[in-house]
Length: 219
Length: 214
Length: 182
View 1 (tube, helix red, strand yellow):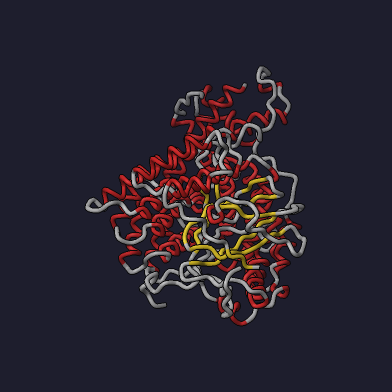
View 2: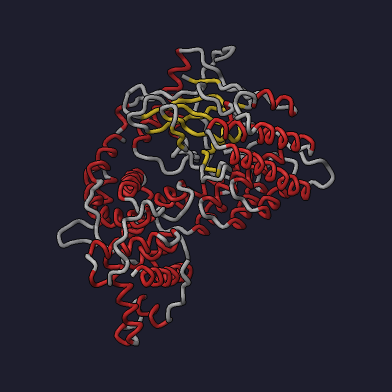
């Protein structure tokens, strides 16, 4: 690794625009020119545009695709802190419908109800062209075959939900049976400890029915 | 379809672990991993994190030497976690759940000094939520000491358990807002909200119809 | 940053919030070149940069009402994009750009003047990619995006003295790297 020598303060001032570079000694003027030249080379603008893609995603945000029922509307309308951070646009329209999917499916099938120390975990990932996507993690002993996601619309967006014990769970997506991928929407990641820079996604499942002890404050 | 994922068989002792690992962990790695799990059991450390790490590495196809090292690293983190818990709770044996939670926080990169400080706030409460909240804040580049200050204050104002995760989320949301908010500004705004930070609601995903399983 | 006759950011934001979603296209065309350049310099990968910028712009649209000061829209957009880039880099586990993603090197024995412009760009990019993310970001915002330290503070959330230190260190590292490469 090369050693860095401190730059002359006069050169720093010139680069900060508070000193006329013409007043620098010749050797510093060369360094000034080299750095400014490098910066100019980096100012090349990319030839791509994301405008069409962004406008298309914005159009997809319009609410007419999903008509949530009254109970879901109350949930969506409540101010809440979301554990996921920045989400890609393709998840936005899905998010409003995902809980609706859960509502619909649990009304029409015999699906389990979370117990007092369990909660519902939702998984969603964008894998265009994938043949299968499953979730493998600490909650299923890192075994394959117990939590498959579905892509009913064949648009590359795979989703599913599971009742899990409340608390932290590490997991990954397995795509097409062979590609292990951290969940880009997880928001939390932890080194898997196997020395190759691998990371697991980390999910903290909240109890479906909050304990009275969780919050001593009435809203 | 909502899936019920059954909780994995709890490993009560080394024998239970052996049955879960057989057929999953490569034979070449089994003796070393069994030895590490036995050490955890002998030292009254939770063995489940080691079993999970062995199952994880095996499922991922990690080479034997790195698989064993991964499990060994988990054991070392558990030992370090027990030392930290012991400093906060010197008069009793460190509860396994506390040790496991602290180990997880260390794995997320939370500094031992911050862990110890947060454990001290409420040593008899499950430490997982406050430690994960702190790890979330540090991952979002908040100053660790300032993050711990906020969580301590939130706890003192009645926010416990999962609500402390809401504090971390609120701080991150403040940081994302427009207007050039610094990390310090974001923490100050959340401090001003306490104890009324927004709650992360869980979706109303279930009906009243009871079933006996998935 | 308004050309003669073009609506100001404040005017466009007001139109979008008033229901004219198509007006957001004006802001996209106005800011995406700089945002793409910024993200490309941060991530070292034009495809990843396009994803980051697209996600950032959609997020900005969704949260436009939270832009408290539309006159500082530019800072806000760069802030969102910078956060997105940091998330991408954090998921890579390392904040450095792997050399396998760096552009191919020219023959380093050539004198700088004899290199084609494309080769010069590649050498400078390689030197930039070797910087830690915080210093890379500071140098790019200062010298590529042309921001003042005040605006950089709004974008990064860091204090001005901290940013000056990062920029100064980045300059030192880049000068040393450029002298090594050529």
